[in-house]
Image (cartoon, rainbow, N blue to C red; front, side, top):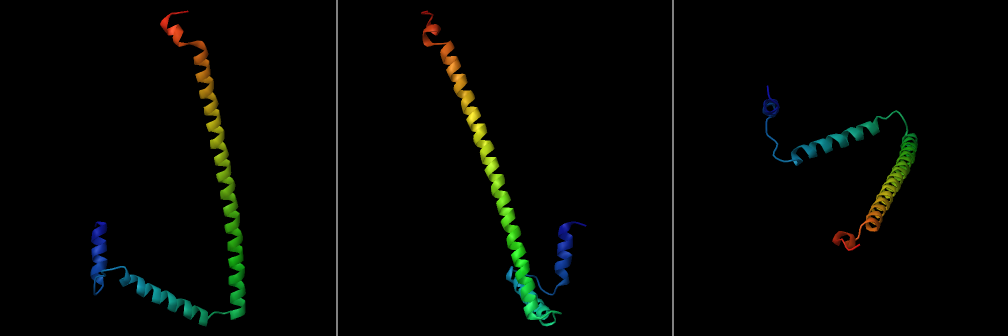
Length: 114
């Protein structure tokens, strides 16, 4: 059985074929909204307690995001420093190579004047 066969089999189980993304986005959004609404209505905690928990969770998430941002900035700074160091070393090697060959050979040497 191929994957397309499975998709076709599943599509045949429904009474109609979906033609656009709105055909599934709208029912999912409505179902999600109803689920959240029912969950809030039958929640075992009061509204104040639920808001406090959400606020605490959001605060922890904000702190964690800040730590991750700081870590990413430090990593980027270290990578930039390593890249600059490598570029400076390569530049120094090129300058040494160019100055070394310029001192050893000259155009006059190529012509045999000296």
